[in-house]
Every structure is written in structure tokens, then in C-alpha cells.
Length: 171
Length: 171
Image (cartoon, rainbow over all chains, first blue to last red):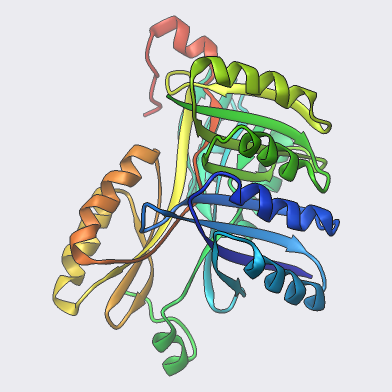
């Protein structure tokens, strides 16, 4: 089972190594991980995704709290969080295929960020599942290079959800 | 001096811990790090940003190559790479400020992804410097929560750059 953890940490050398070490010692492969700045300069947020049982993840959360510089750990589920990921992908694009590819990109909300004689580069911000679908669509053309950030997530604004059961969308 | 490294690794538990450990043992604080899937299922790409001297980064690259499961290390500079980052930010938005905030978001290419009674959530894919500018603009309104992925980067298509000296943009 896949779990997404959001770990708020103090900025200090070694905190990432300790967090990553905790998972590797237990033999859990971290599928994706993103660490970046937060609203406070002295704190970073690590968002990571790992495949393990519900029991194991409970143990891991307890162990995380024992590490120094770890301030807060949240498990985020697909229902209560906005999950997004960034992908940059370079795909083979013969001149005859270019227009088709660009139109495909538009369908997935991807922007062209670099054009070569026989390649196109797309940048795309979406839900990780949608990025996966875009990648599958591009594969027949030939994916030359691809980088993804790993998902990041923030909790949705709760009052909204509990009141109506689904998200209101601003027109 | 800031350096962006793109490290191609084999998917195996512990590789991230070894890479992160290499930096922490030297006392280098990793500013941001993103690890995610690539064009091949058995490989991941770690993109990380670290602040250290040119001499130190040369040493670190050599050390990275000595780690098992590390396949390739590239240093990417702003000139030869497309650098992007993803930010999700929740900002205080009183009903009177909402329209202004949404318009501000449009200027920075940000999309509204969640709306609460007194908050707005934006998602934004941009160059890291532009994300920083957007964050600064939002601060006076009150940034409640913020997560960033850390930058990822792919090398630009070289022939294009060397021929014209600047990027051609597809109409």
C-alpha cells in the first residue's frame, strides 16, 4: 500500500540523511521524495511516498518523531490533500510529428519549454496519475529523457469539504 | 556558490540515504532535493541543490561516482538547463481580497486549486526565482502553508543553443 508522508523539519545538515536512513534500514524503497523550502526560512518540508503496510507506516511515523530536527509528521491521503507533481520530459519529435505532439501536450495542460531539431521538451504540473498517463501517450514517439519531482501535497481546507462533501470550484 | 546536480541512480533501497549521507558527512546543507521516476522503471533521478565551493563540488562528484547504484552525475548550470520547480501555497484570502489574489496568481501563471472560506490555494510551475517572487508578493496577505518540490532540471537541446546563441521559441 502506498503512503504519502509530509514531514516538517528544521533546516540543518544531516536531517535528510537521517530520514532517508530510517527508511533504508527497514528496507523500504522510497518511491519519490521532494524536499524544499517552506513559509519559514528555518524549516523545510519533506514529502515522500513509500510502499509498505499500514502497520509499518504507523511504526515509521513514531520513529520519525524520535529523530532530531523532525517537527511534525502528517500522513496525507488522496481524499484530504491536493497532490501535484512536476515533470519535464524530452520526446523525439520529427518535424512531421511536432504539431500532433504540441496538441497532445495541450490536452494534458503541458507547456513546450524547449525545441530542438528533432525533439520537444514539455513541462507539466498535474496529479501524478495524470503525468503517468501523459508519459504513456508520449512513449510511442520515443521518450529521450524524463525527470519528475516526486509528489508534493497540502491538506485541503477542511471546512469546505465537510460541509458539502465535495470541493466547491471557483468560477 | 550554488550548484545543481542531476544524479541518475538505480532504484534500490538505501541509494538516497547514501547520497544524502555523503553531503551531511561533509557538513553541506542540501537546499532542495527531488527524486522521482525517469524514462526507465529501474532508474530514478535525484536533482539536488547545494551551496559549496567549486572545488568542493568537484570532490563531491567524484565521491558520488564511488557510491554503488550511482550511474551518472551531471552538474547543470542555469545557462544550459531548463530549471523548474513546483510550489503549492495556501494564502489567507478574505472575501474582499479574493479577486485581487486570483488576478495576481494569473500574472505568475499560478492556478487556484482549492478555495476555503478565508483562504486560497495556488499551484504554480515556474523557474525557482519566479516562485520566490510570487511568494514575496503573497506574504503581505499571509502565507499559511507552503510546499515546494525543489528544482528539477534537464539539459537544453544543445544544437539549438550553439547555433543562435539564444532559444528559439515555437509560435
